[in-house]
Picture 1 (cartoon, helix red, strand yellow):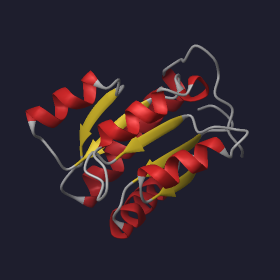
Picture 2 (cartoon, rainbow, N blue to C red):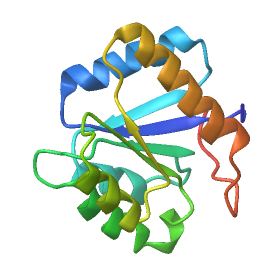
Picture 3 (cartoon, one colour):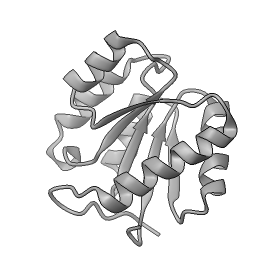
Picture 4 (cartoon, rainbow, N blue to C red):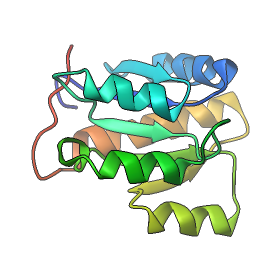
Length: 143
């Protein structure tokens, strides 16, 4: 795992953000978790950081905007173009899946139903995207 691994979770549910945080802790991985509740806050976060997260996990159905709106705006900014974005959502709808990939999502994962499955899923996602996957340039993040 990259020494400075970090994840930005974008999810409008405080309960889901806390559940993800607890699952990440249970993985034992040394990853800094940032979280934002909507696309506007996430873009503000990214624009005001000198060091960017190595992965963004995006709830596809945010309260004020669907994930494709965020992706279009984020991908339009060259500084953020290489950050992997994985849709992490409860939606198993084919229309959402197609829209996600049409808007340059890097992966699409349906949230597991149990906490134990969530721990395994979070570990798998983070290990792959933060340790195995390579981007055109290393995205440095804070410890």
